[in-house]
Image 1 (tube, rainbow, N blue to C red):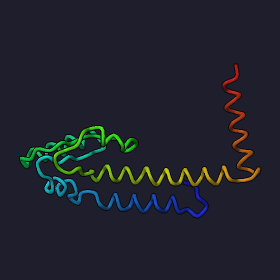
Image 2: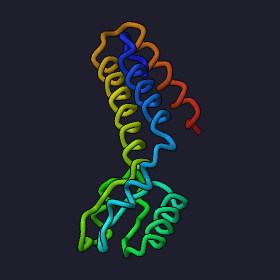
Image 3: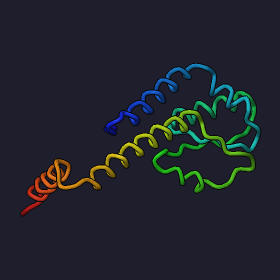
Image 4: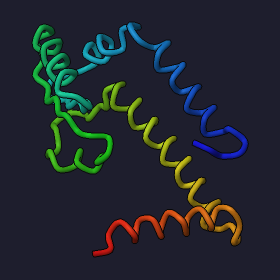
Amino acid sequence: MADQFGIGAALSAVAEIYFRAARSTGRTTNLVESLKDGDRVICTTQNETRRVERLAKERGIKIDVRTVPVSNPQRIFSVGTPSGRTVLDHGWVEEFYRAQIQDAARIIDELEREASGYGAAHRETSAQAQAHLARWRV
């Protein structure tokens, strides 16, 4: 994240501070306590999926827990519709925000670079392109 004002880096740092401060505060336990039969929980990892399944089983509720990568959030719709609500696990939400902040910073960098004149940015891009082409020449 290289915007000249450091906004992307600051947003990323603030998010990480919040995510770390929120650890071990009972979010997963509170989530499972709020669930009812037929609800679905979306997690980012198989380990967290198994953990939520175990906690729900201990509570005696029947829920659907799925692992869906943040990189492909539309996959949530490919696992059918639950009879209850769909809830995104806190880990999934955190990863989604991380990815969106990084993507926004990447887009800003790209916009600045592509919209710049023939200065250092274009010379650098041209040099990278030439180096890339040289590697693939037969």
